Structure formats: structure tokens, C-alpha cells
Length: 233
Image 1: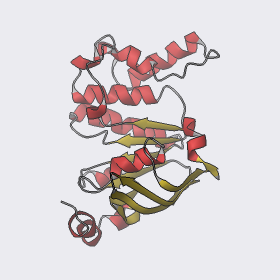
Image 2: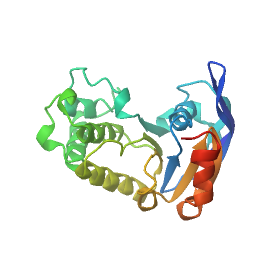
Image 3: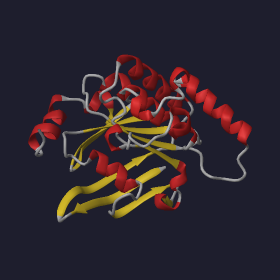
């Protein structure tokens, strides 16, 4: 079980996240994290993964998450990636491996080839990431995160600014992760596509406004509280 208890984040004297409490079973499920710009959605992921300081506690199976971060995969927003770094698609995907001397080279190559096929990247595997479209780059980042088996996935706006083909490929990929009993959290901004994607949602604006099954969360009242009442846009 993932358990978040009284999580608070302060940055430069500002209270970015307030008293976040949340629990979720480690089972195949897609969780959407929604809220206006500046609501703290990306900050939530970064604080859970100890990229930024927070108070409170985060546990997975009754052990601190910061002691078992290898169970998690994090895919940041495309805008945070240095696309000018001269690296190819295939080498970017391969870089998702941990530098363990026990890994077998042949097995690694098989995994890379499987992911190139899954994400439909075979034709561009030797391109530099600087030459990719937004959708292609997003597929590469997700493929990289899949080089190792994880229990929990955190994806920060994987559907933002991508083409329809990439949307469908990524959607199919995360549905497969769900069917393999992975717990997946996704920062998302498009309310219209939310019902087709997520089993449950978290509506966030500095604090959790509502959480639960998507159909019971996407109500006019909760949306108004999240986006208009609590300082949203």
C-alpha cells in the first residue's frame, strides 16, 4: 500500500502543498492528478520521490518510500529534458538500465528491441532526440522508464502537446502497465479525456479537494472548487 501522511511542501516561504493525506493499494490502477496551473501537481510527484524537501511521511508497504525508490519510475515533463544533449533514441532508451554488472547484455538488447517495437520507434531509433517531435520524444521517455520493472509509475503530463498517433500508443502502453498490476499516477490537464483514461482521480489545488472514482469526482461542484474557488485559473 502507498500511504501519504500529512505531506507539506514549503518553497521560498510559500506553502505549496498543504496536509496531503492519501492511501492507495498497489494494484493495477490509473490515477489522474488534475488541477489548475500552479496547483502543485508536479511538486507532489517530486516531493513523494524526495526530489524536493517535504514534511510528513510517505510509506510503501509500511516502509519509507525514500528507502525504496527503485520501486518507482518517474517520467518528467518533456520541457524539463535537455534535448540538445547529443544522444540517440536507442541510447536514451538503453540508459534506463541501472549500471549493474549482473545484467546480461543480450537480455538488455532484447528488452530495448521490444520497447522500440511497442512504442513504434524502430524507424527513428538512430535519430538524435533533438530531431524528434514532441510525441516521439514522449514515447522515448516512457520506453526508457520501462527498461526496468517497477511497481509505481509517476508520469507528468505525458499527453501534453503530442500528436494523435503518439496519444494512442502511449494510452495503449499505460493500459498494458495497468493490466500488469502496476499503479500509475498521471498529471493530466484535459478534463474531456479524463473519463476514458482514469479509474480514479485526485483533484488538487495546494490541497486535495477531492479523490476517488472518476465518475464521482468529475462533478461541477468539485471542478468549481478546484479550478475557481481555491485560487485556480
